[in-house]
Image (tube, rainbow, N blue to C red; front, side):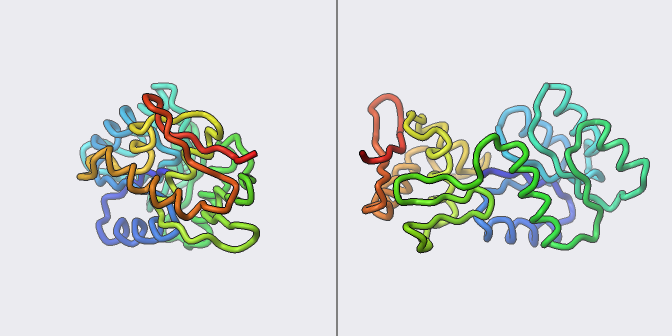
Length: 221
C-alpha cells in the first residue's frame, strides 16, 4: 500500500518514514503543503498522514482542496495543533481521523489499520491458492508459514492481488510501488515480478505476463 506522509519536521518525518517503511508500506514524504497538493492532484495514495502546520500551504487548505476535487482518500491528521477548534475544523473539512502530537506508535498503527480497513472495500485477509495475504498487518504466509518478501515485492503482490485474475498495466504497478520522483525506471518492475515468480513457486499462485496488457495474478486450477 502506498502512503503519503506530509510532515515538515525533519527529525519526526525521518523517524516515521523509517518506521512505516519497515512495516511494509511504500511511503512518499513531502515537507510543504503546495507540494502535497500537487502530489495529491496527480497521484493515487491509499492513505495520507497530514500535518497541519506546513510551509507555503496550510494543511487545512491541502485537505480542503483534496475534498473539493471529490477525492475520498483517507486522511489522518497528525499535528501539534490539538485544540478543539482545530480538530473540529479538520474533521468538518473531511479528515477521517485526528491524532495530536506527541503520540504513541501503537496507537498510530491501530488508527492507520482502521482507516485502511474502512476504506479498502476488500477482506483484510485474502486466500490466493495456498497463500494467505493480510493486507493490514503486511504479512503473507504459505500454508501457515511466513513467506519472506521485500516491501516492494509485497507491494507488487498487493497491486496484482487487488485485481486477481485481471491484467494490470506495468505502468500502473510502477505508480503504486514507487514514490513520485523516484530514480527507478518502469522496467524495474520486471525485476520484482521475476523475484516474486520464484518465491511463489509451489503456492498455487502464478504471475502471468499478458503482452500489451501487463501482468495478472492467477490461481492455478
